[in-house]
Length: 270
Image (cartoon, rainbow, N blue to C red; front, side, top):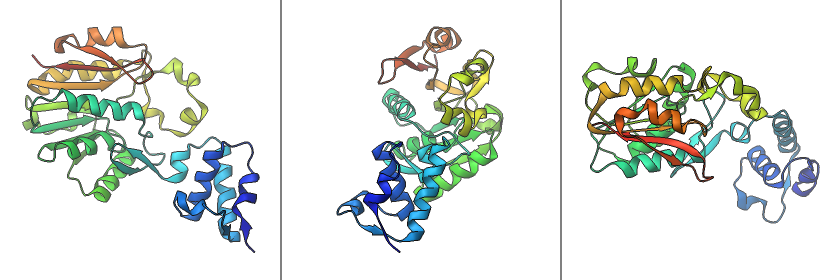
């Protein structure tokens, strides 16, 4: 028995219209033009749609339900093993690329998650050797899936920040980029429900202050960067002043996100 898409969409007045449409497209395995003309769907598709609606009502992020997310020029697989790549992090990639005065030979992405920054950097600089590190084996599995789907060569490594990198890279990294955990433990309950209940807290929470991982990156990065190498990190909106001190060795500056909030620290090895 078929059901009209109009009737299905009318069943979910509590969801934003664009979300309901995206869930219906996900259930049908179709793209947006398919909805033109309000087609009928079979009972199995209707049931899948209602199941996806249930997941969304429980707070599961739309990107996890759809299984993919846009980042820069490509589409990435996305699920609960890693943070959802966001426009703020896309801006970090753009700023970092803009800082480069030549073609980097070595790029390192710490706390890579789904691999979004590492893959975007490889796309920008195809001749660079790109290494990406994460402490989560699950996140790295997702990152490798994205690498294979995009056909880009990135060396993903499991470990704790710099400890996972080959020693030969010491003093040779031209671009060090990271979207590390930067949420303080006390701030967890202030996060949106869908973030705190569905995205991996290990990738979000740094410790009591929120700057613990940033401090480690700043302290050790001096040894790994090549002369005049660039360091670029995403930070919390209240951490700009602290990061100017933490990254003092790099003559840092703070850049804002598109909402005007402190969001990035950038600097260069002396």
